[in-house]
Structure formats: C-alpha cells, structure tokens
Amino acid sequence: MKIVVCIKQVPDTKGGVKFKPDGTLDRGAMLAIMNPDDKAGLEAALRIKDEDPDNTEVTVVTMGLPKADDILREALAMGADKGLLITDRVLGGADTWATSSTIAGALKNMEYDLIITGRQAIDGDTAQVGPQISEHLNIPVISYAEEIKVDRSAMTVTVKRQFDDRYHMLTAKLPCLVTALSELNEPRYMTPGGIFDAYADADRVQVWGRDKLDVADENIGMAGSPTVIAKASDKVPKGKGEVVTPGSPEEAVDYIVGKLTEKHVI
Amino acid sequence: MSLEEYKGVFIYAQQVDNEVSSIALELLGKARDLANDLDNKQVTAVLIGSEVGGLADTLAEYGADRVILVDDPELKEYRTEPYAHALASVINEFKPEIMLVGATAIGRDLGPRVSARVHTGLTADCTQLDIGDFPLQPVEGQEQKHKQLLMTRPAFGGNTIATIACPNFRPQMATVRPGVMQKRAPQSGAKAEIVNYNPGFTPNNCYVTIDKVVKEVSGVANIQDAKVLVSGGRGVGSPENFKILEELAECFKGGMVSCSRAVVDSGWKPKDMQVGQTGKTVRPHVYFAIGISGAIQHAAGMEESDIIIAINKDENAPIFDIADYGIVGDLNKIVPELTKKIKAGQ
Image (cartoon, rainbow over all chains, first blue to last red; front, side, top):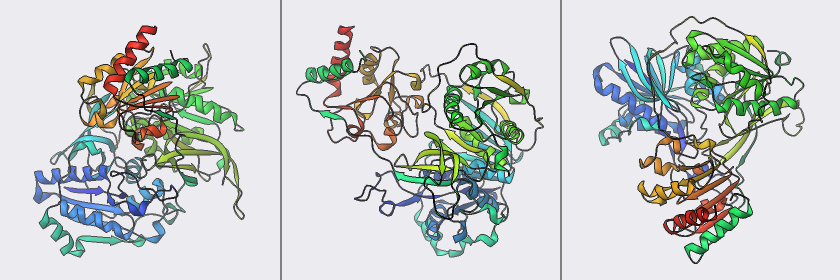
C-alpha cells in the first residue's frame, strides 16, 4: 500500500501571534511548523503503516520554499519513508487552484493508493487544496475524517466523516483522497534514532522542480491563479469600549443593568 | 471563456433532510444586494436533492427570482461526487456571473471540487462581499475592470484580512461564513420561476458508499439563532458552574449559553456550542463574555455582536479590547447577582 501525505510549512500561531511595532504581522518572529491538520494526517498514515510495516510505504510531499525541507525531515523522523519537496521559483504566488494543479502534477508522476491531506492550513484556512487535488486526479475525496480504516484486500478506505449535526460512515474505492482533522489523533513524537536517520541520508528527500511536474504552464504559479489579491491588510481591531473596576458585585450589577436598560435590552 | 456570457447571481440553496439550511436564506439576502449593483439583476437559487421541489417557495419568499431544481434519487443524502456533478453541470449550462456557496461542512467540501471542475477561482469563508472595481484604484498599463465581485475574508486566524477578486474567470465563486450575511424579511406568497434540470447521474469511481448516517442529537438549539448569548470560558471554573450562566441566559427571550474553545477542549461542553474561528460565528444582539480571555480566534467568531459585555477578573484580558462594556471582577459573585436583579425587574 502506497500512502502519500501532503503537508505544509506554516507560521506557528499557537504561542500568540507576533506583531511588529507598526502593528503588522511579524512572520519572521514566529516559528515555522508542520501544519497541525497535516500532522494528524501523517499520524493517520503512520498508524496504517504500523498495521503492516513491510507492505506499506509512506511518502510525504510538500510544496514550498527550500526551507520546507525541515518539515519533511521531521516527518521522516516520525516514521515516514520518503519525502518529496516541490520547489521552483515559477510556482510562487499560487492560489489554491494553481497549488492544487501543481501538487496533482507531481502526484501524476508518483504511485499512490491513498492520499491524505490536512483539512486546512492555519495560515490560509481555506480547506480547498485537498478536495481540489482529488478533482485534478479524478479520484474520490472524503473530507473531515475522524477515523480512517483501510481494507487492503478489498482496496477500499472507510472513513468516519463529521458533519454539523451528524456523521457518515463512508467507503470509497482506492485510490482516494482523505482530508484529516487535527482532532483525529495525537501525533507521535520524533524518535532520536529517527532524527539521526532523517538527516543522515540526504537522498531520502527528493527535490522536484517544474520540469518534473505533469501540469500545463498556464495552470501554475501566480499566472495560473484565477484569484488575485486586491488588498491585504492587518485587521483593524474594533474600538475599545469602557472598562470599569467596580468596588463590589452590587456596583458591577448596577453598571450592567444600567447599560442594558440604556440599550433597551431589558 | 467569454466572460460576457456569464450573467446573474446564483446561490447554492443547501438543504439537509429536505429542510432549507439557514445559510441558503442568508446567501439569498446578500445575492439580492449584489444583483442590485449589477446589470443583470436576476437572483437564482440552485436547489439540489431528492424530492426537494417543495422548498422552492421558501427560496422565492427570501429573494430568489428563479430556482434551478436538480432532483434525482442519487442526491438523497449529500455525497461529494453527485452533488459536484449537479452544481458544475448547472454552472456550465446556465453560466452564472457569481456563484455563492455557504461555508458549511457541505459547502466547504462541494465548493473546491466544483471550482476545480469548472476551472475558476474560489475564495473561502468570505465575511464581506461587494461589487466594485479591480484593481481598486486605476493602475497605469492595466485595464481596470468594473462591477467585479470583491470578496473579503479573514486569514491567519483572523489576524489579517484580504480582499480578493477573480477578474479573468467565471463564475466568480465564494464560500460565505454562516451567520454573517443578513436574511431579508420574507415576502409571503412570492413565487419564483422553476427550471427543472437533470444532467444525468451515472455512478463512477468517485461515488462513495454511505454505510451509515448517525445523527448526534445534542438537544442544543443553534447558538447562531440566539438573540442574547451568555458565553463562558475556562474562567467559569467547572462544567457545574455553567449553571449560573444558564440561569442568566434564561432571563432573556432568545437567550442561550455558548462557550469558548478551551471549554470544549476540556470536555465541559459539546463542540456545537463553541464560538470562534474553529467554532461558529455569532452576531447576537448582546454577547456576554464571561471568564473568556478573548484570544483573537475567539474574537473572530463574535466581534460582530451588537453589544459585547465582558466580565473577567484579569484586567489585562484581551477581551476588554473588543468589549463595549468591560467589568473587572469575580464572575462567581457578579453573575448570580445580575440574574437576581434582572429577574426582580421583570
């Protein structure tokens, strides 16, 4: 069974978002991490591998700057077998449409039975690239996976898929693409031996440029992106209201009741 | 692609179990506003399902001029492939200028698949939609296009905001956050033109099998419908202590209790009560933030509320930066006292 996990390097927002003195986002001051939903997807793949390690191969794929090699090595140290870095200047500035065409262009030149992506990345929050990749490859997609089970003899995948007020148990024929939620599992840590091995053999991560991708020129990079940013800005915070420190609970209650009455709520 | 062929504003009229989802009505309200700024002012609802034609009148009452009905037994329960086939076929056949889809679990699955199929851009989770020029200001050597859909969305956990256009592809497609756009007052008796369209459904490798559907009855009404939300954070201290919030909520008509992510993560309350970036977006008339520190991800889900009242013992809590009225104090003393006082006045 060949599993490909698509992962993305994103700035870490967990320890608080950092701002420059002028109020704009300071991306340089934030750590670059493996996107959390993607890490859950990787863990799901590794658990499938744990069931039959000799007959399962997990390849991690990312598209990004050369420094995205870091998250591929991290994935190897967690237990992935191989990594692929898609990087090329001409791929820059891609929106979700062009990104998904590009990654699909790499996958067309790889072998896969199951593709797992994270539901969404914490920088863009679009949740589009996974389903769009599946469309470009003409394979089924099951998004929002809470449980993933493969049947190796039937070559199917069964997924518990969360909806607003219900869940579905869905079965799809492989090859299939599944998008994973970070709630899916608790990703394992890298092992010391794994970290050593991940870096000892540089060739475990392949690097592909544009020439290795099965995708038309008009479908990559900024030029291949249907959407264009008209304006981007840091969010202007809502104006601060009143803050009071009442001397007693009674005083606090009088203050709130006063405001609610003034606004005709009560 | 000849862009001029694409006309009118379309919305995906999501239904689940033969019931129109609230988001469909919100999209109709917005579609009406957008259409008024365009040359072609027709608003079309695309209704997909099995034996759902009876819902067309509701869509008409909320602003649809026309309903395109794709009705087929294959469409009984939502599945990505037949629904994507239905919507993509409608787009190719009827050529909308704008296609709006709700950013619900269904819409965020359907939208990307359809946009990839019809080769157009899709802007996710929009919180504002306008008709305007692209580029916004004239740029020398670049044609400024008029009457474009300008799609505004938060990114980076709500820390940045971007306005996106799709100038060279049609339809201009967006998913829209539920709870953000306003429904119109329904016009009872309004009728829409009904167009039946069936592109044919032949199961292929992309069709998945539904083994089981389990509805999780939480017994909780939708917090997005609340007029007053009494929302608790980790500062409430324990699941039992949410009782004092419930008692306060009961004082108000349309009052409900909601919570922050920390509360859900601690297992105190179910996920469908969560407000914020990874939960629901709410805009009640009054939002009480009680023992909620107010991380930016939480703010993203509630800052559009009309009146925000925050009670927190930490005077440096970020919630005080967005609250209209902030009270530094002990929620355990203030909340029960407030309930008592409001009840006494009723």
